[in-house]
Length: 305
Picture (cartoon, rainbow, N blue to C red):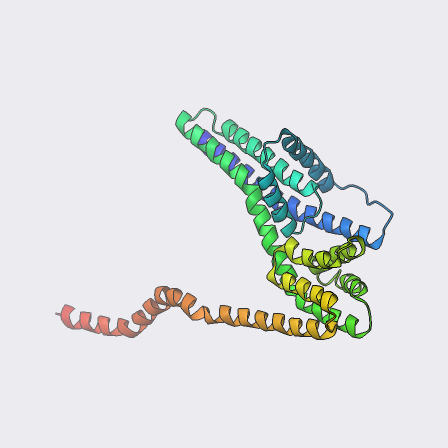
């Protein structure tokens, strides 16, 4: 009974840790996007701190303490920054929060596992604590990977609409930086992921001396091929003076065609995916309905008096 209660407590803590990580990371990404949007629009007021921001600040201080020790190598830190940036998080605090979350979970979960399994077999207790340590280290990575995939899908989904709006702005005579800024403002509610990327690009176009680098950074941040092509197309229009409207319209048509091809590819996989469920669930019932009466007739013939 005590062992079952301990395992129940451990399972509850693991579930709460997963839910907490999945809740804090998206909220942190939304707060970072909101702060970036406020800076882009020139807002002067500062929103009051919420509980999620306070928790992220506490975890970030733990991560900063880890970075100060020099345990994380330069190559690992650069790769982690690219991964965090590709997930939609902005600023150096995101890396600190991620590392702080790994440290907290790597310490908290084993402690709870040891307390929950105290009094049991020592060998099993050591195994459970070791599993809790590994789970605490892997949980932030899994949550970050999930957020990154959702952010990439959101950007890919809203990019064709952004290209259509860019075409309209270019045909209206707006310059490139003003067109990107206007499209980011128009898509702030419909597609926040694309709006955040374009808003950051508009800010870099005003700040950086090399406008080509600001455009190419779109694909570097998100690691999306579609944004790389968009940045390359816009950079070529600036470098060679090619018509912006024609290039954007061709790229928009190409992206929509690729989206349609992806849907057709997924639809073509359905027959192969449905083969196993058909064999397991439909064919036995069909054989039973078709062959059942014949089997009963044979049993009556050979089992009669």
